[in-house]
Image 1 (cartoon, rainbow, N blue to C red):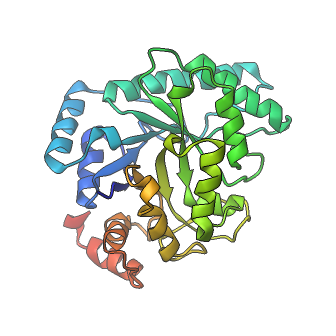
Image 2 (cartoon, one colour):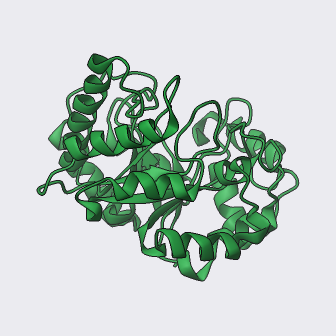
Length: 299
């Protein structure tokens, strides 16, 4: 069964709104932030919303085991020049993991971090060290290191860098990987040769460590190191290649999450999920999305 969804908002009624939005898109999974990704402001989780959301998921065919949480972007475990800031990131992630555990979610996707002015090997070691301070034997949440485009001083732009970070983690069963097709393309991995990429990944890390895949087209060319997502089939990767990733036999049990751009004021996910289910490119995506959502009752 195809496990497909998108990023959804964690709003005023918390996980309830996220579930309802995912179901409205025809999704059977979703990804969310427990607060704004640009800051560390978080509201207390309400048990009533958690219970209601779990009931909605059960009724709507969403398996909580496949739901993904994403850590905020501002966390940087790679740079320790300012120890106070580095320890703040560690402590905040500990709190975020507690929230994810409270929600009953199993996976937390994390951008590894930015080296900034320090050497990359030092930065990679800092990430491992931080993860060792965050993860313990009782941790129920698996941290998924996301493959990055290599913009600026981003860490995790190669399979080898992800492997180096993971090798430095003491409790390796508590860490996994989230692939991102746009990031892979922009980092220099040709999605047209995805079988070869997976073969290399399997030899370096192991396919079993892939627990989530972000499905995005790219606005930029192979190896551009830009990280600008495009809607499915409207970028340089192409719809056919993305369908091959989504339906790859080795990833059949892995949740696929769309992070494609909104079209104007509206989310494209209902229509892009339909495209993937039908394996058919929609050349009128933007017009169809805007026509559907211009009726306020649909939004």
